[in-house]
Amino acid sequence: MSREIQIEAVHEALGRVKYPGFAADILSLGIVEEVAPTSEGYAVTIRHASEREEVMRTIAADIHRTLTHDLGIEKVELRAHRVEAELGEKTGRERLEGVKHIVAVGSGKGGVGKSTVAANLALALAELGLSVGLLDADIYGPSVPMMFGTGDAHPASVDRQHFKPIEKYGVKLISIGFFLGERAPVIWRGPMVMGAVRQFLKDTLWGPLDFLIVDLPPGTGDAQLTLAQQVALDGAVIVTTPQDVAVLDATRAVKMFRQVHCPILGVVENMSGFICPDCGERDDLFGLGGGERMASEEGVPMLARIPIQQEVRSAGDAGKPIVIAAPEHPASRAYLELARAIVARISA
Ligand SMILES: Nc1ncnc2c1ncn2[C@@H]1O[C@H](COP(=O)(O)OP(=O)(O)O)[C@@H](O)[C@H]1O
Ligand SMILES: [Mg+2]
Image (cartoon, rainbow, N blue to C red):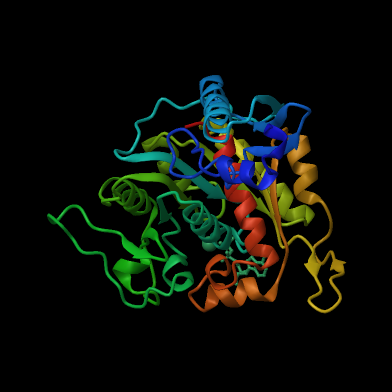
């Protein structure tokens, strides 16, 4: 009898199972790897990355209940596909009130596309149904106002100490650019940078957030340190290009995060090959596989490969990142994959 239940119905039912503690479902988060009919029912394979055992048990129980109870499938077989992920040591630093997870996006080098990754990652997480904030910790070179086309929006101060983030495309934003005006030069020195980052973290009314993404300045300086000292980071995403020099700098960034006991979630290789819009052929403009090599040398996962595409740049320049401007674009899909990979690596 259960053989008559179509696989589409199973997929639809799995789409109603939420990831514990999140509004997003296990299907959109990529937790479900395979659904296959068996002689008496269905077998469901779920990805087991860094989820805690109790999270996996909850997911398995929810799948079982949904398929047997809601669909009347007689026999549901659950298989787990274990994916190794490095989560390292948890820091003992304080959590931000109302913010479930803080993920930093860093790089060793400027211009590798870190801000573009941070912005599109934030939007992709929001696309998955999560509530997301983006903190632009690049005090000298803020890029959030331009990438999100916020014009001359200024955060409203509430009680002379706390301020409301600017909201755009469903993501809450804060950037030094909102306070100074995009073109004003910033001449602050080290201690002021730390002060600004601390204020952005603690005095912004982030409200309930599933994820706060922090766009770090390049390198391993004051902003990185302040962030690591002030709050409990769930992990860092390291952006690099396939070139050797960028990889070298990224390796340095990995070591810095390890020193401050921030787990490395993995590596994003950006500008990873150009896909010709006419013929679909791939051209490896910036070398090949640097991110992958580094990931394997450092023992961290490779999270995503984002192709170099003119549309990515023009979307950012136009104040409407590619995930919003062209959700079906190959780069947008890569950012969505990245978002899923990150959620999968962080347990609820
Ligand atoms: N995948 C990509 N394809 C094309 N252009 C990109 C891509 N990623 C980033 N860029 C462009 O490269 C430039 C630098 O990116 P940005 O995100 O500001 O780097 P960073 O924050 O590391 O300094 C920007 O003009 C951006 O639009
Ligand atoms: Mg930047």
